[in-house]
Image (cartoon, rainbow, N blue to C red; front, side, top):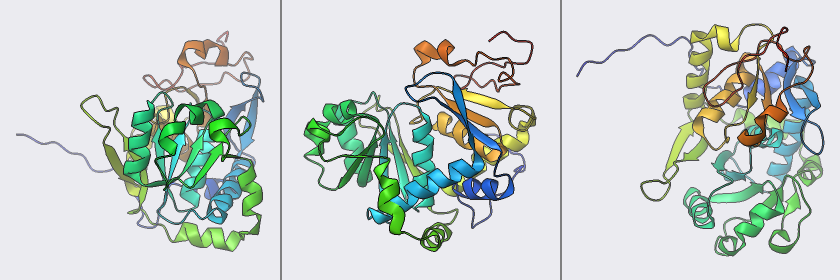
Length: 302
């Protein structure tokens, strides 16, 4: 069998982690736009999220996770559609030194039970009470899942024990910046970052363990090899592929690492509603198979 290889475009430092970009970008370019998020209630208009703002929000959630007893290497599951808070929670989990476990929001209760149990997840971040209601029975069989937070909606019913994700910021108010920095600096590239589960078409979903180095190597080499996609001025992407999918995570991380602006849309069937209406927003967008919207430019009528 013949094998072919090329030198790596980018190397990953042994001390590097996925959370680094949040803090380094905020130090370097605090007013740079990292993401655009939907207005309250969903849909356009879009609001800019600067590097400084994203760092504040990631820091608050990460401190909350630490205060809630989430330790370095602990697993925290994410059960949600693609939205801004998914990326926010992902980076907060990494900043707290923990490991994110994404779950498709369309997964059956049996699949969710298997993933939570197999991964050893200690906490779950769910999008709405409807998600926890759908898996209420299996949660009772998972004593290791000690905490549940909701991105939106009021706790009640099966979600009675859950708390709003926003409450984590208040819970972490006793955690110092130094304590968070110590937690972050204790993690290295070789440490586990995420466990991504297969779809389970040939049996139970299988967990693929990926380190910070794995993800950063993929992303940084893609950025170096494809500058016309990631590094040209004004680049941005609207992501609608489920973030439980490995390719969607590459797009998410690639945008933040490269400086391309990232937006989220939860439903591919209504994607056209997410396209910016103003031509001054429609600047050279990324085209990526499945995960992002085709290129827009100043002459495009969006």
